[in-house]
Length: 145
Image (cartoon, rainbow, N blue to C red; front, side, top):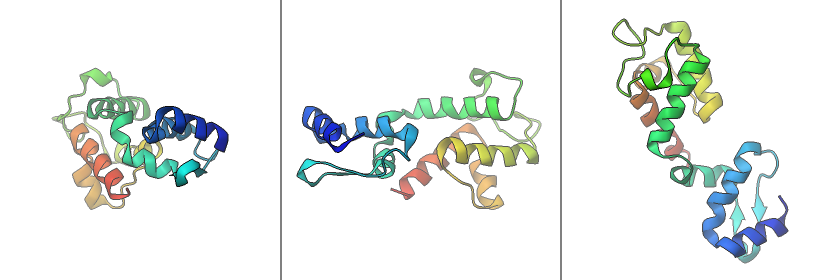
């Protein structure tokens, strides 16, 4: 995206166009790191994605994406719709994930959401249910803003 195109979007939609620009660039962050626009506006895709995360994905959509990630990357024999938001992910009362699944889950979270899990203590708290993963992702995204 060129500066001229950036000018056009910001002029057409106002400063609120940051969300539009961020969504256009999030698929290929290497394409443009920062775009400088008229009136001194400096577009930083990573920052604007964090700041405007609510405009891209509702909390419900994030939970759906978490469930889809679980089913796809852990090759679960259930559908995303069958996973309850508070269903335990580990142990016999829930999905029955094990330590190998936990490692794959951590890698998947980093790839899918850009959020890492730094230790087993954090993992033990953050990876209990879809809701705890959801809250952890939002917390980490907010902390880096």
